[in-house]
Image (cartoon, rainbow, N blue to C red):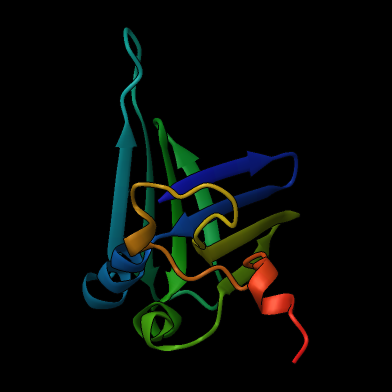
Length: 125
């Protein structure tokens, strides 16, 4: 799971196995230890909430996802689950393969819908 923060948004990107775990167990957790400091943990959790919600306490970024959406997301084509809480956009998205260089965990990512065309696919018959 990747975490991206900016001025007004929290975005989590999930690999296939993480979307499946969220669907089946209702929780995905990642902790990044910082040398000589406290770790940061980010948690995505299915909950009985009407729309996505986010909080930050004691080094933990927690995103709550409506339980019905979390259960079904793996089986749907929907790329993301989106919400807004007090002016903070909450974006939960499936992680796509890069369209340039390969990555070691590409097998656990979703096919990139913007994959670049190859010269062979541009030939005219």
